[in-house]
Structures are given as structure tokens and as C-alpha cells.
Image 1 (cartoon, rainbow, N blue to C red):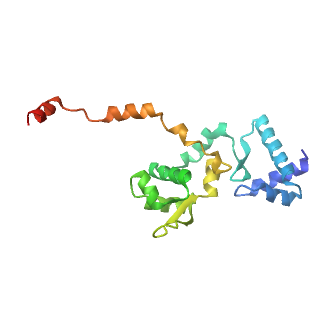
Image 2 (tube, one colour):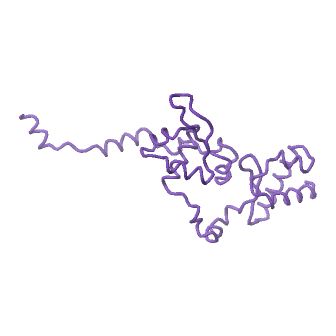
Length: 198
């Protein structure tokens, strides 16, 4: 790893507010993209070995510095649990629906959640997590929503393919059947006998 190239990447990433694509770093350093990715991988490994409080990570198709995962407790205390930016349960549910079903219309999100999602979608759009990505060709041509680069950055994902598979969160069919049986109202024997005599 060339120390000059490594230092240049560190300098650029230190002042960047968003993840910087490797193509842009390659242009700035006048290097091929694979060479930039090698330097970034070497830097990330070095920071990990040294036990630094920050890490060089690839998110949203680019590179950025962020606090090391093992020190998240200290960071959370510093920012008071991120109270001003914390999303409600409804917002998180809606964001999950958009992330996994995109492109998705407002009506589809509302149908999946079982409640009107208009206000929550407006909030997520204002926060920069969700954006309009097109229109459905069907009747009325409703707006379709999808997630943004900000969503990927905040979740520390390089692409949507890095989302955990939904199957990890869905119980097996036997568990669902057992729950359905347990939640069915029990039949009242006295009611049954009165039905028979009528």
C-alpha cells in the first residue's frame, strides 16, 4: 500500500459528508478503481488490527469513515440515543415495507400495514430515507416509492442485496398453524347444546 495514496484517501474521506464512490477516488488519485479498492481494504484491515475507534466501511456504493461497532455504546451515550432522529415503530415498519417491496405505492404500503401510511411516508421522504421512483402504469398511475442512498448509508449497507432475507424473520408453517389454533376462540359447550336443541 502506497502511503501517499492511503493518506490522500484518508484526507478526502475525512472531509466527505457522504460515502465517496471508488470511481471518484480513482479519478482524484489518478489510479485504476481496483487499486483504490485495494488501498481501502488495506486501510480498513489496518484500522481493525490497531483497534481504532473508527472504521473505513463500504456503504451505498462508496467508502466512508464511521465509528467502530464495538464503541457504539459510547457513541449512543454521546448523542443521547439519537432522540431527535429516532423513528417511531410505525415509521420503521413502513420503511421495512418500502425496502423489501419497492417499488411500492402508498396504497400497497397501507394495505400491508393495515393502516393509512400517508403521514409516515411523508415523514420518511422528508428525512431522506424514501423517495418517489416512478409511477405505476395502472389506473390512476399512483406514485411508486423506493429507498434512497441515505437509507443505505444509515443502515451501513452497500446495496439492497445486503438486506437480510425475509425468511429469517418468518416463523415456520408449523408455528403459524399452532398460533392460529391458540388464537381461535374456544367453542362454548353450552352454546353448542342450545344450537342442537333449536
